[in-house]
Length: 539
Image (tube, rainbow, N blue to C red; front, side, top):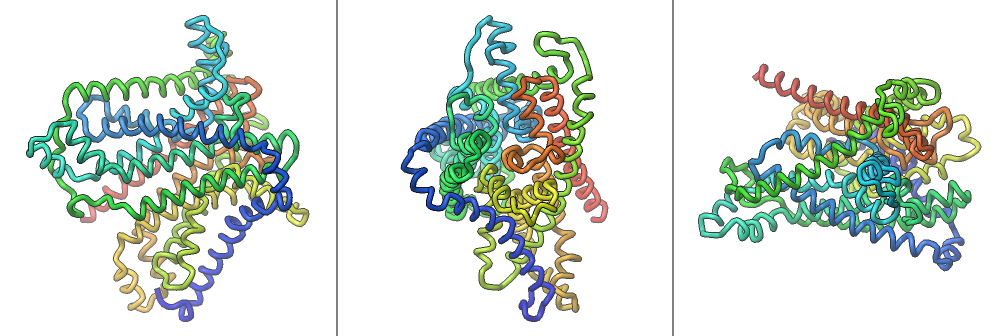
């Protein structure tokens, strides 16, 4: 990229990016932090936040431990064993990523609640599943896929030659795992622990549904606003939550920057991994089978409920719940979900690509600050982000602004980090001589970016688009304080219907919401396959 003085177009693009980041990322968060003002002292001294803080830390420790342990076993089974049904297990394992996390809690109540299908229908027991135990179980299922994917990525990229060398020197399977496999997986394991901890800490929907009297920081903040209209206290609670999330995220950044995934060389090895003992493969199969059976039970009950009159009392087949979803205010919510999600995904992926190019290819002071601000929303709890927008833009002179536009903007900038980091990774793999070749032929830097780099970054663009769309159609916490009756979305309606015990409508909504996410992923897979086929035909 040429100097900014010689490229007024690039300078304008940079100023626009900085301005948008300042207005829609920095400003709302600063407003939340500053909202309590002098009331911070009174709120902190009152101590009403101490028990929710302790509860949050307890839930985070328990749920993260079990989610990461299960994720590690699942990842090890997928990478190292030759057990059967691995493609099916992989597909089932990502289902929790395609639905609102609190949907697991809703199904948990259906299955194990006081009148649950299993607890009451099978065993005739009326038990309470609300509280710490309920949150722990639900969050383990909801968030283990994040740990599984991170750990599986590291395990799959480790060099099998080191493990083979250890086996050739006489080490047994357990010794190889303890001294070679596990140390090589530590960076991914650390990232999985911190990432899962952030998601568990920030989660609002699951504790809201199955927490009962066990209050955590997100539900306390929500209750202070919805029940008492106490915005300063809610902002103080959210600031405590943000501080914890930022500490975890900064630790993750330091871990990612300070550890290397390289083992011997940068070249991939074609050497097969040492064989896993048959008994271990069977253990992994049993664990993966039990976990996937639980996931299928969770989501299967949702599908059955969506197509039955009153599950589980009256299991007669019906499509009336879907007719209900597509009518009236529900139809509006479904339409809003699709429109908001597609619009946010398009703008977020393109903005992330432009911002990544300005940071990665630019030579100007302040790049590191902008880089940090662009990845910071990954550490900002959705509830905090939503309160920030409700606080910052709830002004009289903005009454003309449609709340739907505000929801779209919040979705765009809350999801910037994924597309941005994908674009940065893509740019690092493209030699700078590609840019220089275009500019040496007289093209401006912006034109070189548009005509040369953007076509080569199609994969990063797709990742940003699909990830933003999936997160936009499944998020609850970001929009819980922003919607109006005319701008409600699917997750809001699902949450309302679950609280009203309207299981048929809620589960039908959920099935459609998951369907939208699966269509997006399927479309990306088709586009990626078509691109590979096209490249092969050209070659």
